[in-house]
Image (cartoon, rainbow, N blue to C red; front, side, top):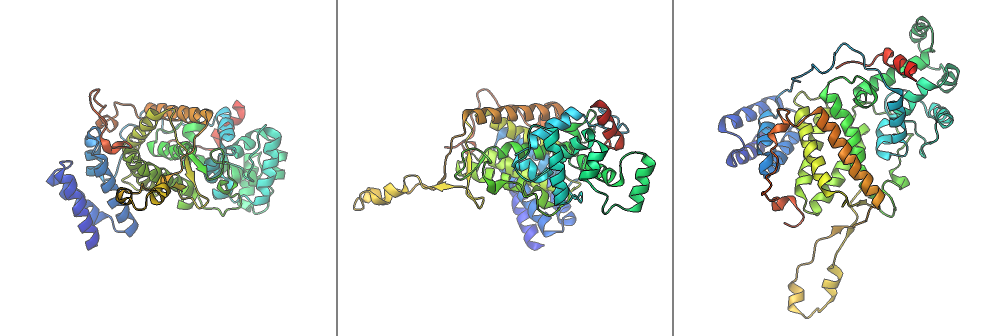
Length: 449
């Protein structure tokens, strides 16, 4: 506890020194964290959050936004505007949106790792996955390479396959008498199918997928942030290339494990790929001295931990404002995107540039002996033009989507000031210097299809 208070004082004193907060605000934040944060992991995350926010404030544009963030650390957030959607109105899944999402998950190892029905606590066996894949093969032109069925694929099958086909793929074993009675009252689907359907719709809501798959998504910014973890992680993972592979994600070592144990909807294990992608991007950006992007990804990662843990002080508006900054940073690079090459164990692939020649040339030359050896750099690998254009288009799409949900006049996002036309980029930034989804939603999708 003493160590926590000491480090907390150091960070808050630094924020006070650079005039990000006042003495009164420092006292308030310190008291709130000391009295309200007890778990060691939560204290570590609070320290990380304060540190990275203070570093982000080196950019003058973000000073007001950082001040807002610092003052709000540990403070519960409440949504200010729920008027855009009737909270009592059901969100109906759109069959075309579901199918497009299902197709986008095929051979997308990031999305497969999270949306694999075997990992979502739905009690679907390996044998059932095999039968569902057979159904999908008859219903679609593309079949995933891995032995996996994703949640959108399952939703599509539940709508378009006959009751007999679904009964063959999802047998009655393990269904309780109560579930069977309920199915009888419904007068249609068998108990096992209804059980899977209910679980699928609940997971759609938990993961915020209604924002992508529904015609009336609930105006819950927390759920929007959840689904953004899927899209943003999928996009950033396009930059990752396994060592020895010719295209991003083409190595079998990165394939989703369809036999993995069920881990639930918000368990850390379910989003393991998200943490891995963030760590790889941060290390790559830091090595290339692009600290601004590294700090943004670091903050987004820390904040997403609070989102997944359902912490009351998670601020969706602040999270989305930082995502906007990150997307803007990457949009500026288009089309000059670099591949992040990873070794088999997930580390950056390193290549010492010039060190061998420095060591071997002129061993008797005092100039050469004193010349510093350049640090190892990640092995560069060019992405093909089509991939770079696809990545750029995805950054544009995500930016437009977030901008629609959190417009520039939002009270939090507006704290980030637009850069001055005459201003120069700081050297440290550059390389070189609640509606619910019920059974009615599935019925509406069936009728729409």
